Length: 317
Image 1 (cartoon, rainbow, N blue to C red):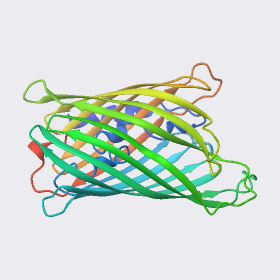
Image 2: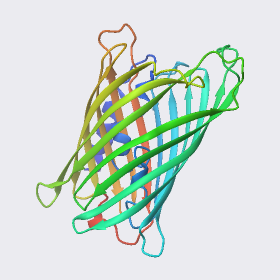
Image 3: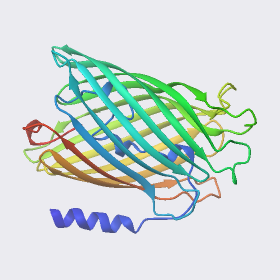
C-alpha cells in the first residue's frame, strides 16, 4: 500500500502546467479536510486536545505572477468545563507585486447537545501588505488592515456542517493619501458540510462539500462598492483505507459575475501515523473560455494532535 501511495504522487506530478494565478486559486477545499479553522472560526476547539496544522500551497510554475502561500494554525479547548475553544491562523502569501502577512486569532463557545456539539466562533485579526512600488506605482509600499469574521459549526463523531463569514469586515490602517490603486480581496459566505460512511472493516467513505458566495472588493479603497461577485461549488470524496491512508478526489466549479468560468479537479493522498499526518494534493485548474493558461497547484500539509488516544485510530475531520 505504501508503494501505491508513492506511485500516485509521482504520476500526478507530471500533470503540472504553467500560467498565471488569480484570486480564486489561493486555496482549495483539500486544505480543509483535517482543519477547517481558516475557513470557520467556530472550528476552534473541535477536538478535545490541541491540534497543529501546517500547509504550503503553490504551483509548479516559476512565473512571478503565480501566488504561493504558507500557513500554520493551532487550536484547542480551555475553561473549567472545556467549553471554550481557542486558536489562531498565521499565513504568509506572495503574489506578483506584493506580500501579505495575516494573523487571525479565533475563539469559540462550545455547547454540548445530546446528538453532538454546536459551537459559535469569531475572529479578529490583522493583515500586513508589503507592495512593490516599482510595479504598483498607485499604492504605497506598505499598509495594514483589521479584519473580523464569524461562524457556527455543528459536529458529532460522523458528520459536520458549518456556516461562516470569515471576512465579515475589513478596515484599512496606515493609508497613504496618494494611494489610488487597490488589491483584490474576497468576502465569502461559506457552507461547509460532510459525513463519514463505513463501507467495511477497512474502508470508510467521507464525502464533503463547500458552497461559497463571495464579493470581490479592493483594498485600501474598500469604501467603494464591490467590484464583482462569484459563487463556487466544490466536492471532495475521500476513502480511508485501513485507518492509515486517505485518498481523495476533488471536483469544483466557479462562476464569476465578471470574467471566465473555471473548473478544477484534484487528487489528495494522506498518511496517518497515529497522532501525526502527512499529506500531498494536486489540483488542475481550467478556464476554457480564456486565453490564459492556469497553473496546476499543489498542497503539502502536515498535522499533529496532542492527545494520547486518537479517535478510533483515525482522524476523520
